[in-house]
Length: 223
Image 1 (cartoon, rainbow, N blue to C red):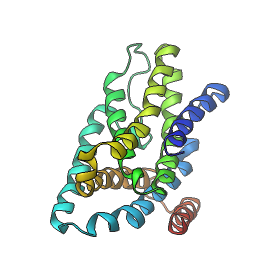
Image 2: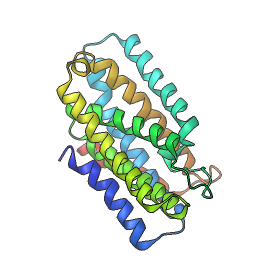
Image 3: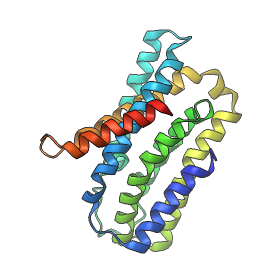
Image 4: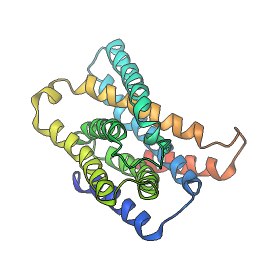
């Protein structure tokens, strides 16, 4: 299930978009808000305690900050696709390599903590669903060939399980579990907080969004 769930989540999202052809990405804002809050809560409840348990606090802090900076760097190329924004031109038919490479590295890193934290896979899965839907809408509405779009989605879907496999089978990742996980925490912190901030409209109070966020935190707490 560790390897299967992320793949199924992305592929089913693509199939949903291909069949139903939704036009408005705004309809997924509440799902995005839920995913951001859920991922943030699981990161705080599950990952933070484990990396600080037997490690130097400042070293871990440095790697968390490096993770935040890494995600900011990746977003120069992905244009914010990791948190629901795809700003690339729909008129281009070229394969979006920069988008693919940045999203793939992001997804690969997501897979590392799953090896020791089973519940984090649910946060990653919920995070992937709205992103995969929005990405699929862009790909299918663009002039990128369908076969290239399917290729993109298949490879993207395989990245998180590949990260989990590397974490489980390569001693380097096992030996440096704490700093690598701290790096991923930084990535998650940036992604989840940006999602929460951007899902607000003009910083107005939104009761539905608040309820969704609280629900996500409560579910994460009891997992």
